[in-house]
Image 1: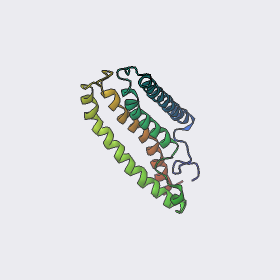
Image 2 (image 1 turned 90 degrees about the vertical axis):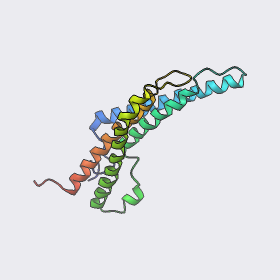
Image 3 (image 1 turned 180 degrees about the vertical axis):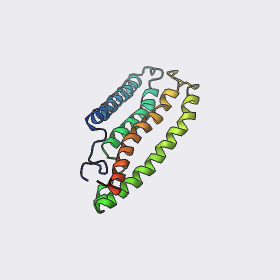
Image 4 (image 1 turned 30 degrees about the vertical axis):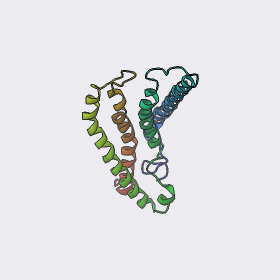
Amino acid sequence: MAGGPGSGSGAPFGAGGARFYEGLGLLGGLILAVMTLAVFVQVLTRFAGLAGIDGIDEIPRYLFVWLVMLGAAAAMHRAEHTRLEYFEQRFSPRGQAVLTVVTNGVGMLLFLSLIRTSFVLVPNAQFQTSAGLGLPLGYVYAAVPVGAVLILLPMAWRLVGALRTLWPRPS
């Protein structure tokens, strides 16, 4: 089922989903640029013998969590995470569908557990603030459930497509 939901080549959620997840990739690039700028400014101020800017070292550290989760979601949309094409191509189309069901099913359980854990972690983190910026850490920890949901959506789409390949509807 080339290009369909059971394969890695189909784009989940059509053109709108592709634009949304492409936007996540661009947002990840912007986050990376901000992280790089913060590190560059920090290095320049220290090289010049000046005192560092308070909290600037926290910016890349906290943005990195968001970068990883948003980048993982964009990669998951493109099916670049849970696939090892070399091994997958050794299976029949039915075997590939089974492999998709297993990998996406296990992955979905992992991300659902992250979301469940986040219901406790994020609200509790709101009571803590970072030392330099005074930022409530709940904003940093919120990257985990947001990213997990954005990762789950294409995984669920591919899981459903693979199940349809295994058990097609009678005509």
